[in-house]
Image (cartoon, rainbow, N blue to C red; front, side, top):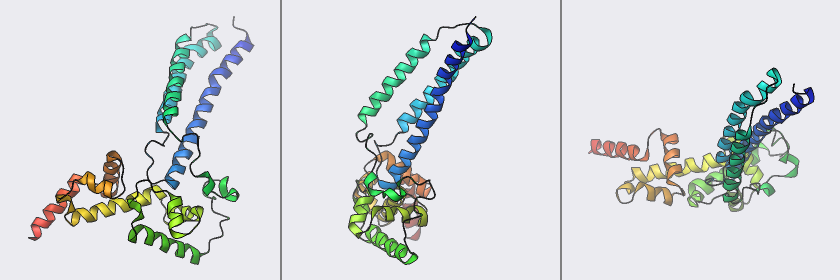
Length: 255
């Protein structure tokens, strides 16, 4: 019979990994959220690849938990779980491979932009001590609008919240507060929505007849065709080509 201590150790061995996996998934979500608060282009920086690998690890853990630990604990029957070790090893190697390929993954995004007094606050309380008055909020908001909509700073594909802060001479974490608490959106969503509005304007002005839609997207700050198509559909409910056809049809109907 399997000793009780062995059963307990095996149970701990099988129960602790999923707790750790869920914790990593939570950290990955937090990391991706922070990216959207600081960058206008996050391709190659996100941890979505890690999320799916962790989900696969959780799935493999569940399968082998049923296959290995239950027979030992309830039926005193040992089973070979070398296949589990091999599968987990392959997933671990995959995590390391994809992790090394992501430059900057080990560097927290723009950590220096977050004041120590609010860095560790819980979500929803992050700005409770920033001390911005309503007047200052409006002032900063107006400066953001001027930088984005008039000077069109969003055409820089590598735009970050630090660049906007430098452009309007304000602190990055104050700008982040404006986006999250008063615009009710992230920096990433705000900038990419502005880029879409610029592209829509160019299509409506007929520029799409002289240039490709992708060229208009690149001119407006997008550096990825996939992101452009996905975000255009999100903002308008149509693909770029469908929107172009709709505009052309309206123009013809007026003539």
